[in-house]
Length: 89
Image (tube, rainbow, N blue to C red; front, side, top):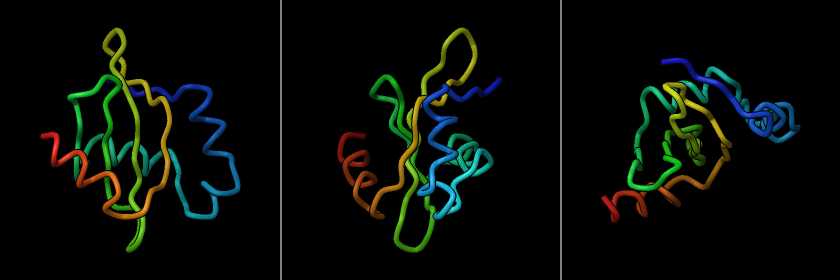
């Protein structure tokens, strides 16, 4: 399945914050392909994986016409969203 980033996600990759904590396209794709936690109960979906010792990376995405579209991503304090997803699941 093809994966595309929205304009918003592409622009966010260019921010100082994303570069400072080393978020790149490869890391986003890793989160989609091998998430630590995945929430498909919501649409769009949320996949979360470890970014560093203290941070997780959450990626918001949906499938449109057979293409995975990355809507946005954000770093979060480790454990902040993982526990909420596990409670719902």
